[in-house]
Image (tube, rainbow, N blue to C red):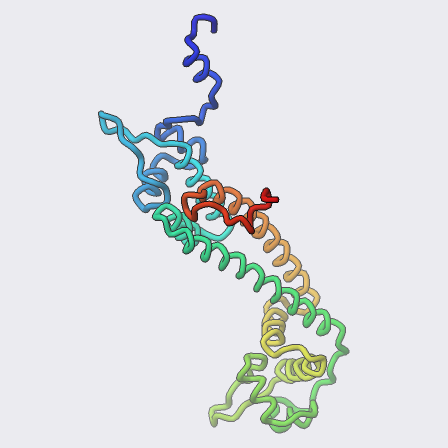
Length: 262
């Protein structure tokens, strides 16, 4: 080390990812293939590389930041959304990138609300007593209406909302099987509990797919866990994306947002 000039000593202390990187260096640092690096550059997901006198690509830290942000976003919200966000950043359309990022967060918020409401509907459904089967099946819409204590028009409105799906006779009349009658009673009781029809329809669909309300509740819990994992992945991706967005995109931070003031 004593034989090094001051400049050489300075270079020896710099991290391995400092300065110019070859395609293989960038690929390894981001955990992707060299072909993926070339593809992402061609698609505008990362900035175009500089070229040496011999035509070789040379990448910098900003390319690595962009690539890591894209990989993280792809894991959190999918390839297409990740690509749309990074291409917006690279092309200078930062507001569009932030809008797409906010929409991704918004979808998670909407899913959480759906899970919350669905969980409430399923818990209510799981505690309902069994319904005695009607004496004769299939039943007409009028007979079902009288059986559960609503009007035929109400049953048809539930059907339009997707909560009921009775089969049709060749004459065009609705026919309700015992399962349809049970669904109608479930809708009636849940509506009395002021649950919204869209969530009731979703709950009944889940119950049909999973077998019963208890199993559907477990599936909903699994959905919530996956959503938590996605939320954490998007949090990590947002931190990586922040490295790609600096003052050059919006200028200096307004004083009323700069906490260091005053």
